[in-house]
Each structure stands twice: as C-alpha cells, then as structure tokens.
Image (tube, rainbow, N blue to C red; front, top):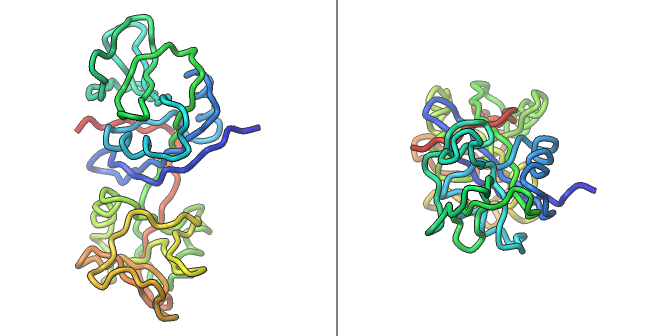
Length: 259
C-alpha cells in the first residue's frame, strides 16, 4: 500500500528566468532517508527541496504527528562540511537548530516540526517525509472562455493556473506581461457553494479585489480572473474571452536558490 500523501499548496521561486513552483506532499509512513527518496522519485519528483519560509508553512500541516520529517538534504561523503540538495547543488543557507550539526556520523537532515529548523540525523532512522513536484506557469495568448481555456490546458496535459502564494502572483504578473487582454483566466471557479481550484483544492491564499470574495456571486460572475492592472482576483463572467495561464508539471529535480 502506498504511503498517504497530503498536498501542501505553496510555491517558491527558483530563479529569475523561469516560473518554476513546487508542491510539497507529506507522507506519513516512516522510512529511512534512502527509502523515502526512492518513494518520492517513484510517485513524485524527489524528496523536498525547501527554503526556511517553506519549511515554516509545511511544518504546520495538521497531518504531521511525528516530531521530525526528512527533506532532500544530505552530507557530501567526500567533503563532510558540505551539505547538498538531492539534485547535487551545495546548500549554503540551511536553517540549523542551535548546536547543529553536532556529529560527523549522521549524514542526513531532518526538520523539526516544532521549530522548522534542521537537525543532522542518522539516515537509517525511519521517519515521515515530504516529497515535491515541480510546476511552471505558461501564458496562452488565445482569447477563450473559461471553459474553453480549461479544456485547452487539459487537452495539452496541463491545467488552468493555481495562484496560491505571493510568489505565484509575482510570477503570474511577469508571465502575463505580453497578455493581449486586461485580465487572464486562472483555475478558480465558484461551485458547490464555494470558490475552488480546478483540482478540487479549497482556497487558502487569497488576492481578491477591494470588493472582496463574493460568497454567492451572480450566476454570470462565477469564474476567477487575474486583473493585470490591479493585480487582484476578480469574479468574472465565464463567457468572457481572455488570455489564460496554464500550469504544467516539470519533470526532474530543481535546485534550491540561496537568494
């Protein structure tokens, strides 16, 4: 049976030239660091790479019942003072807990749920872990209704974009600069009495306009668009023809930025 995974919807900017974001999946089943990496590579991309700000968010996952979890960080066997992310890049901004690392024989890094700080730990200890998947935003300069945009993205093995953090909003703004419409569709729709992302996830991060989220928008205002001038979300007539943002899975492990 596969270990239970819980999606933490949060995105992170990898560098200034791409719009790569990652989603983190919590796996409750305790595994060694190597077993955890194998599991992540089979079912997702790899063990999670994460900034401290990301760690503070994913550590709040209510599914976490154990005090520590693995991430994709390990000691370089050839240079014991060097720590590397799973993709091989040297990690230079690790949020070590006070007094850590405290021994040379513990080769892997676990994160404390309570403090979101890093501890060196023996790699054979079976504990829960986070896997990640990488995604990219792509602007489509076609003028489609919301339903047509959703169909187009999915027909091309993508989905309508999820703007789930301040970073994602900034990246959406950058990606949408060449847009030919005043707003762009995103994957948000009012259905079954609430606003939901197209993958069924509830809305946690919000960026509504001054008028705010409409608890019961009129029938023709039940699709979410990003106003590119004000950079806010607007309930919009689903039949309007707008450019739109797709999001696609990016295979492989991305490296952590230290900026």
